[in-house]
Image 1 (cartoon, rainbow, N blue to C red):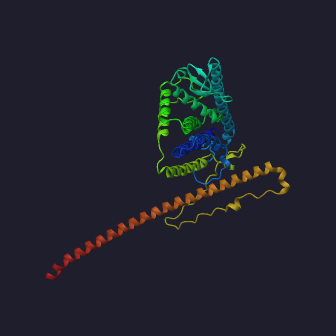
Image 2 (cartoon, rainbow, N blue to C red; image 1 turned 90 degrees about the horizontal axis):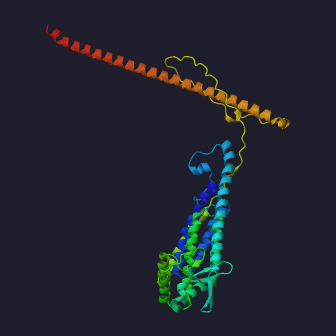
Image 3 (tube, rainbow, N blue to C red; image 1 turned 180 degrees about the vertical axis):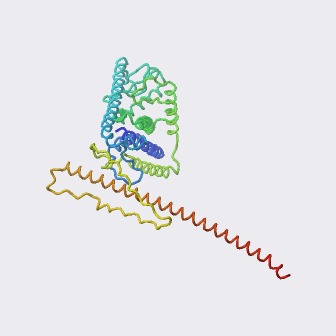
Amino acid sequence: MAAWMVMALAPGLALCCAAVLAERAAQQRRWASRWIWLGAMAASILLPMLGPAIPELAPLRLPAASPGWLAGTAPIPPHLDVAVRPHGTLLAGGVWISLSVATMLLLTFAAVLLQLRARAWRRLSLGGSEVYVAPDAGPAVFGWWRPRIVLPAWLVDAPGCQRELAIAHEQSHLMARDPQLLGLAIAMTVLMPWNLALWWQLRRLRDAIEVDCDARVLRRGCDLVDYGETLLALGLRRSPLCGLMAASDQSQSLLERRIRIMSSQPNHWSRLTACALTGLALCVAAVAAELAPAKAHPAATAPVHAVPVAPPAPPAPAPAVPAQPAIAPLAPVPALAPVAALAPPAPDAADSGDVPDAAEEAAERAAELKNDAEADSQAAQEAKRDAEEQMAQAREAMREAEAAEAEAQQRMREAEAAQRATQPSTSGG
């Protein structure tokens, strides 16, 4: 379970890259991008679950791993793996459930605290809409079942243009059901709170919700300059209480990105760029599907039953090898019996009741055959060593013969030289 949880992060990270590329393509064509991140979150949960059902199309598919493979160590012995695997699964499952429950309790506490604070807020009717006025919250939309608009107290006394644009922004959230969409994304995060990719995708989903809301507000005919000034004014007086609300006053980096996206104009290459980014995003999504944990091999997942195995018998002493002559031809190594001949005979149907006795006899027979094979191997090794000694002696004798021959040739040369030296004196006399 722990190994599966770690490998489940791989498709989520790949889906993050695919969603970023798809979001860039959507921005090129002024399309909504919040559905891209919602789909990435759903796929990050479903791909690890549906990994065994996905066909393997590439060698990137991650196999189902064991704790020993994950740690990079040798495989766990069978008699230990049977005892370790259930405990590891229970521990990982307990951690998973504990994190989910803790996350759900924390979110429930934040929602209850927000509802309690909302009781002290006063209601007003501004621009034909009923809104809540809070001293330290908004502008935002709070509540999932019955979402409502909350504005900060300073915005009530702000210029009418800014107040109307802020209310229009929050009403766009209500009409697009962004609070319910955000609640669904948070619920998916609670299912896998240990998946860090889900938390990052949730953050990008919140950003995409605000970008899509800006586009909807501008499509209704609002002035871009006035809307940008309103966003800057809201960004300078950010509310400290946002929490689970769909708030329009996010971080300064997001505010700059929203203004840059709103003020950008599509060029002649926007269609081609969007097509290229979409194709690349689909390729990365296909890789994410292949990175999902695959189905474990039957041999790896089959239960292992611990069977007591008797210790092997000590090897028989090697037979004495008779001394060989100084130079003798190598004796042929005795051939081992074929594997089929070593196999014990199949038990008869009549002996099916004596399975333990037949198994013991087969084990004893296998041990005897193993001892005989080891004895033959030792005998062959002894014969090989004797042959090597004989070869060494033969090479030594050859070196001595060469030395004697060289000495004899030297003496012959000396004799010939002495004979030539005596010839002049003889001829002169």
